[in-house]
Image 1 (spheres, rainbow, N blue to C red):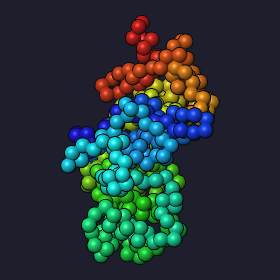
Image 2: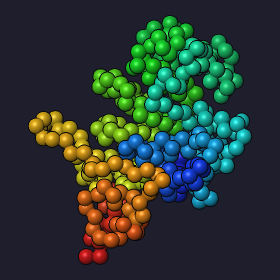
Image 3: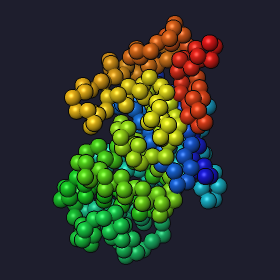
Image 4: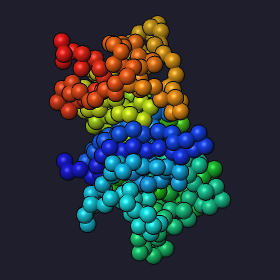
Length: 332
């Protein structure tokens, strides 16, 4: 599959009163057309900041390192995302070639403007459609995502819709411009399990139909197992494990990924106690030296864990983990 977006050596800091705070540290990955990549980690891991970087959406106090590079491959040629500065130029990655579904649709829709009016405004901004044509496309897309009576919903406001319907409307709005890449930031977190399943099935159908790429951000490895082709696990701004979804879920290589999976409830043994990852994720102001996971890791192999940043080690074909365990095993 041809690459749709390449992220290389992405390092992002925020300028604050306390100094520069590192949110993303030397992250690299790519997403192909028709591929779903799950970006997994606890709150504070840097997932959303990484995703917003793909659309150049982070706050103005964001500082990107000179080595950071994000390349979007379009039909008209490659685009250097981080080189875009003017609002007009940024439209190609903000609702044009890239769209984003945010975690809470109520915060994404303007409460005093109807859903249809917002969808029409977006389409007219990114195309030369007439208002009538934009309305037809918007109603058609609301219908495509499974919203009943789309003509009626078109004239309603976000607060008049249920949580699941709002999420579908948000998906319809994001897809109405026919993006090449869809970023879905925790799109199922606030939904009940039946609606979650419907949204997951819908996203699979959309990938098959539009051959778009999806970056699916979540903390739920169960959702990733059902949705993604590959998974990247983040912790405190770094990618600690990456690979095809089945090998990563079945044989996790990094202690952090193992901890996330161990914390999931076991439906075949309801009496087994939950095993949370011990401790809390450190503040970005207090990033530990060496491996960023060393303050919570139960498998520390030596002083190098506290002082040396681990590099990615190939566990198997396409499956890598950044952990000193494999460096020690290689020496042995």
